[in-house]
Length: 376
Ligand SMILES: NC(=O)C1=CN([C@@H]2O[C@H](COP(=O)(O)OP(=O)(O)OC[C@H]3O[C@@H](n4cnc5c(N)ncnc54)[C@H](O)[C@@H]3O)[C@@H](O)[C@H]2O)C=CC1
Ligand SMILES: O=C(O)C(=O)Cc1ccc(O)cc1
Image (cartoon, rainbow, N blue to C red; front, side, top):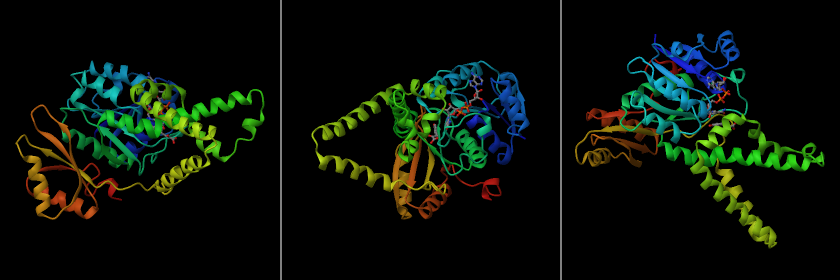
């Protein structure tokens, strides 16, 4: 049986460990800086067994997951790079930012090819192993950021395991692109929620009615302000560039509504809310845990001129329409990885068949393994 080491068994590490244990068909060893957490993880069955030393936890591991705050992930990754890991061992993390960790991994030659960044796009304002749940990531996106010059077969190995263990939808992204997008939809909202709570708390100090009257809107908008401060300190510190830009845009947006209010411009004020209402109503309802399906696959393109054109015309000959095509990774040897996106499941399945029967290596990160756990 393969072995997975989960370093940091809090909310995310614990949830991942539970999924790996219940559906991943791997032995799960845990490590945590807090021996109380490690004991609890062991006694509540979140991990098969715990180790008090990192070196013992990662010994003979086939997979290593770092599930600590980003600021603690970076030095631990450097420590791991100095250890003798099992050849071919895949390392990954779960951190909310990807640029900084990918940059560091790229500078550590002993692990750079086997470090595939990860970010499950689900969680909670709670933290700690007590809040861990085996299906926390079900139907959420799980972003992978493969290394430049890494191998797609390692990405496929990791995604097979994660798909079974988490039942999330795996997608590949460039680290900087990830940090800008997630900065806007997750990091910036956390800053705004905390700022609003701090502002109202200031008023409340001299008049307790402020927080006493706090109703639905304030509560909905600020739930995430109860999240772990160390984790969020590290998220901001590791995504400074993108967040400074996004906060600049936010200040400009606030200034527009401030100006409209100052001028008593009721038309502008109404259109500000109309625009937001229309856009908010278009957001898919996640209550049932449903997310847009991913109709995409990746093709390893050999180092021959015109290969991308060949893929496109092959699909054209079979009347398969592509909704998006792009090179996501170009390697030093001239070869690369092509990302193909289709409008529907029929074209997606047909394209994989056609490309494979023409000798191309096609990777679908969410392909169900025949007879595997996630076919249930
Ligand atoms: N909380 C959330 O909703 C989400 C968090 N993430 C990311 O997951 C990572 C972990 O977050 P959570 O599980 O929420 O935090 P957590 O606080 O629940 O768990 C972190 C665990 O790491 C341990 N730890 C901290 N520093 C350590 C060190 N230097 N050495 C050994 N152990 C150490 C702690 O004792 C704790 O058990 C973070 O990088 C965060 O950005 C990703 C997706 C969602
Ligand atoms: O609780 C919530 O709504 C969250 O926002 C959870 C969350 C926190 C951090 C992440 O990187 C991803 C998801």
